[in-house]
Length: 204
Ligand code: 5GP
Image (cartoon, rainbow, N blue to C red; front, side, top):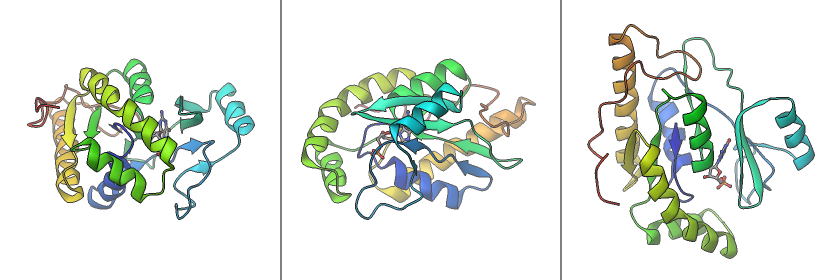
């Protein structure tokens, strides 16, 4: 699972990962946020709050959270047979997944600097108030994220970050197969905790 502050590049890295790594299935989240200008129609399932809450009440979400006034949720995963699930979520969602699925692999993707994070958010059309709030929260999200993450990757550039995350996924699959467990369960987890990634102890 990829998590981290807004502007870290999670969406871009997640899209590249599913293109590059076989048998990886990216969950499509629901949100009550309005679609941004130019954003893909299938970036989320865009719904109103009532529809979202009805699905939450019906236990239709694996996890959900409110982020800056909008609701975001991961539907209960239904991947094709044999595929591993990739989630791209915020810190609160990562904390819920950690509680619900202790063996899940949590990868914190962080921006190389607040300036780059700000530039990425502006480039994709986030409004000014939103950028300011996210920057203020981003540092705290990274600090807390470091305490629950199995691995930390700094997104210096997309190909490099994607390659690092792909390496982590391969490591998980190898560990799962050596441990005799399956890495192919929907929400599953490698059989053993991840070997600390080289980025794990880098300074933040
Ligand atoms: P954005 O509005 O920029 O698309 O997303 C805002 C934040 O919500 C991002 O940190 C994104 O990763 C997170 N997010 C997207 N989908 C989900 C989800 O299903 N659950 C949770 N908890 N967070 C999500």
